[in-house]
Amino acid sequence: AAPYFYLFQDFWCPSNYIQGVFNFQKFFQTKEDDVFVASFPKSGTTWLKALTFAIVKRQHFASVENHPLLTSIPHALVPSPELTMDADIYDQIGHLSQMTEPRVVATHIPYPSLPKSIMESSSRIIYICRNPFDTFVSAWTFSSKANSASSASLTLEEAFEMFCKGIVYFGPWWSHMLSYWQESKTNPNKVLFLKYEDLKEDINFQVKRIAEFLGCPFSEEEESNGVMESIIKLCSFEKMKDLDVNKFGSHFKIIDNKHFFRKAEIGDWINYFSPSMVEKLSKVIEQKLSGSGLSFKIQY
Ligand code: A3P
Image 1 (cartoon, protein in one colour):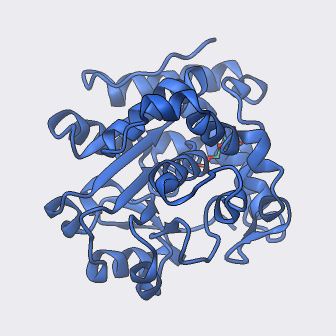
Image 2: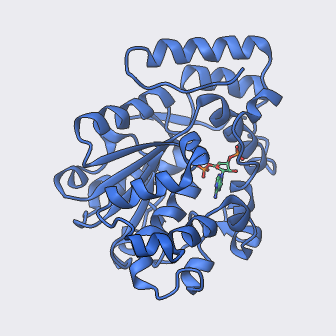
Image 3: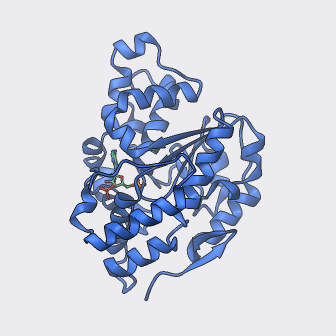
């Protein structure tokens, strides 16, 4: 059976997330220094969460590299109030209020459905998106693993049809991306819009950008004494994939953390797409994003 989604506030919400999303909207109290890491699923959330966490918390640690919190950073849903927290499946909002400040809270909720208190505060949002070809392959391979124990996984072709119609977790993906894209244009101090591909291309530059946006730029000393470099290393795919928490831990007992680390490459979609799929997705991208100014470099 296919996973089922509800069209909830104009986005496709997985049934088991509705309560968490609703609670987040209704009960979450934003703090002025909160940082939200927002993304469409499989766009590099895990990477951006780790980077953001390490960047905003670095002043608290004498040595970033050796701090026990950072060396066990995970990723996602390690259920520790000290670490980043995913708001979407958060049905015990109490935990969020116990996190040390500044809090780094991750969410897949589209911009218009975020709690209003986020807009009314001076908190910041960093959004990451990824080209839809790789996002699709990452999502499909992930869900085949996540659902392998049940009969819920879709074939590549079935999943692709749904992706092109926008019927995917937190989709349509184009509305998701465009909602943050437009906000980042009208309100650049509130929303920083990033692309996975740009982080892969020049992580130093993007890490500096994130720190500046969050009001905690790297000093010249931090750049020269290796603090910035060690953050980048700590959050690299190889390093994170190799952490015990990510090798053996699990994401709220729903999915093994190891599935969040697959290849981390640009262009792996070529191994999955037929020529007709390439044509179809290219058309959808063209139709949905044209005129918005948002585009992706796809190497055919
Ligand atoms: P692939 O499936 O293409 O390998 P998300 O974190 O939003 O779920 O996205 C998962 C994708 O990000 C996966 O892509 C995963 O391998 C990649 N990823 C995870 N950690 C990463 C890191 N530290 N650096 C770069 N990419 C990473």
